Length: 223
Image (cartoon, rainbow, N blue to C red; front, side):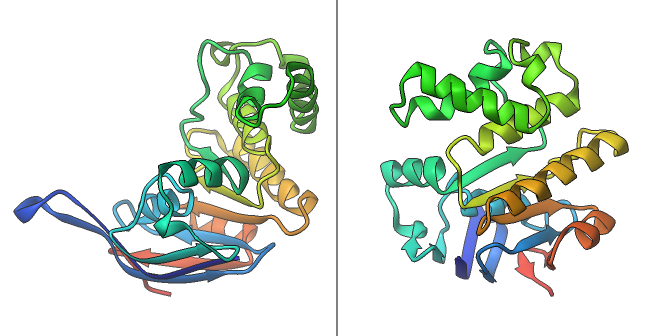
C-alpha cells in the first residue's frame, strides 16, 4: 500500500539547515496497523506530513497504492489528501465557527455532493463516534475528547484507504485517550483494507494498538 524509498526532508539553509529525514525506507501493507515511535525531533511528524501529502520530500520517492505521491503537483496532492488519506491531529484542527455536523461535512463540499447528502453522511459518522446528540454544538462547546471524535469523523468523511493519526491522544486524559484509540482501531476494522498509521511517543500505546512498530531516531528508521 505504501512504499517509501530514501525519503529526505530538510528545513532551513546553510548553517541553519536541519535534516528532519535522512533517507527513510518504509513499506506498509494494506490493512496493516503500524505505530511510528520516536522522541521529539526524531522526524515523526515530518514523515506523517509526507505520507499525508501535506509536504513534499527533498529527495527519494513515495508511492501509495501504485501512485507516485512525491511527484504530484499541488492539485494532485489536494485530490490525494481528499480521497486517499484521512488526517487526525493532536490539536483537533476543527473550524471554530462551524458546528460538529458542518465540520464533518466540510470535506464533502469539495466532492460536489448535494447539501442534504453531505448532512446525511456527516450525521451518520457522528453517530458512529457516539456524538449524534452533539451535532449542533460548536467546538468550544465540546470537551477535548469530543472534539477529537469529531475530527475522527471528519477524517472518515471521504472513506479514505489510509488513516493517519499524529499524536491523537496527546491532549487527552488517559480514559478519554483509551476511548479514542478504541474508535481508531474500530474504524480500521470497519474499513476492511484501510491502513492505520499511528504516530506516538507512547511506547505502551504503540505496543498495544499496532501490528508493528517503526522506530525513528534522528530522521532515520532505527528498527
